[in-house]
Length: 458
Ligand code: ADP
Ligand code: MG
Image (cartoon, rainbow, N blue to C red):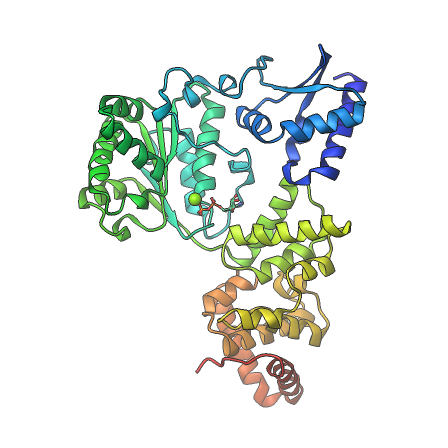
């Protein structure tokens, strides 16, 4: 790139970060400026999925940015690796979209998001197996685990993993024929084709692929006719050594009203469950999302959000979005104070909204009492100044919430349940011989109970 192009590139990036932070991604600084000709600024992108994202979502903000920076009425065109700037579909590897070949009826693939790749997938105890298997599937198509079936609760990364497999394969084998579709769309296409008498076309379309990915396959439940058709699709692909990847909100045998022969097919490959992320993983995910969206924040912010939100990753992202929104609206840097404001600050109020007593209230009380930092309390340090408050915190959590030892351990930086058990016993037994500890604990409990209706575990 020429110096002037480089300057334009960095001004573009800065403009977008300031005015359109929601579309910004960390890889924007890899977009090459190819120069202006005929009133068009050409921008080069190497990855097809990124190219498609830019063409679909970013045209208007980029045009606005370019015009405002150069003061000229320029148009913007994103171009792919071969330098050709065509319509979005023609930029893609042939197997990915097959324009022209597919009929509109069967051309309903889901769009891949450049955010959902392996590089941005944070691995922790809850998803390690699923991640490793997905990687193996992408690199040894049809030979590692077939089918690969991933299941778990909402917002735990199933769709992200499925798309990561597709993107990895596209990078390694750009000509691979991929069909990535939601179960709903599969069922709709099936019904349409039955109605229109186009079943041959349907079969041809679904059986001529190297990788078939169906998201949320549990929706097949109760749909006998579609199950029957899917059974044949499955067998045809499987026998030809083609890869099948499925996601579901439940294990195969737990999907209601699913034919036994499908259950057994699904179980015949690898079934991997994704679980809720522990505290440490939640912190890492938040940091990774912040990096992806080019957000800067001190470490205590992800620590705080991760302690507040423990349900699933979509909610974590929602919390981060709230924080970013408030920072934008108030034109402030993101810091702990701002995060507290954005998330409704007062954890005790959360306790009332939430039928489950909140660990956050306990954490806050302990932090305030011992005057220590949240990151230390939840972190790895074993120094006495944090080890004792941490044990007190675990004891309080055990006594005043319904969380299990495992869950409390998860909260405290992914410690296992024996550590929590040890902490609970230590605090219990020390109190009877250590008056100072007893007084400390009493005071913390008092500060808690004056605000919160404590639900003691019987
Ligand atoms: P599901 O399909 O299981 O309901 P998604 O795959 O849609 O969940 O994930 C919800 C959000 O959480 C997505 O934005 C996804 O990128 C993010 N996410 C989930 N798991 C992870 C992870 N391990 N690392 C990074 N982001 C994740
Ligand atoms: Mg999903």
